[in-house]
Image (cartoon, rainbow, N blue to C red; front, side, top):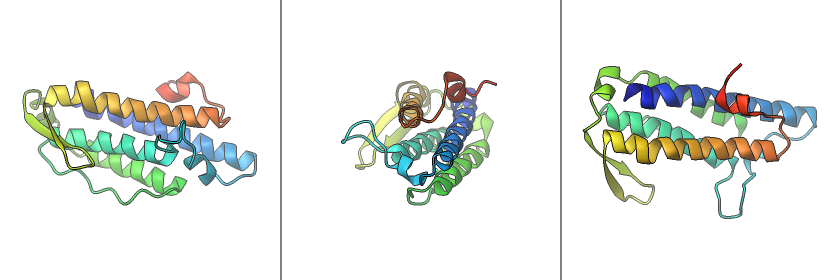
Length: 165
């Protein structure tokens, strides 16, 4: 359970940080404010890039916290600036790496409730939380962030997403 949560979220959060760095470098090379990238969205009713990063961090912190029977880290309000998003990613990584491995590993059958933004609580076991909600949600948002940057012209390839050298 630890590897399926913390062990998965941490490297991809680090990859997401690198993707944002590449976005900044791209903007600087082309002489425009990198914050312009953060407002990009795939469709008018979808989250923009900043919100995609925010949601990836939310899923990466809430699920392991529930599994560890801890309160999730309180992330600051979402800002539309690269430094703020990088800080959010770093805080998320630091928090989930601090969670007790034994508690998370023992949580497969733990009854947990994932709270939606509207206040609705969805019941899961630890295993189903990861496999049917948090991991898919996390990858949806990281993938969408990658796609938005790629669509903007940032020179990214699959290994940037995967983090392979």
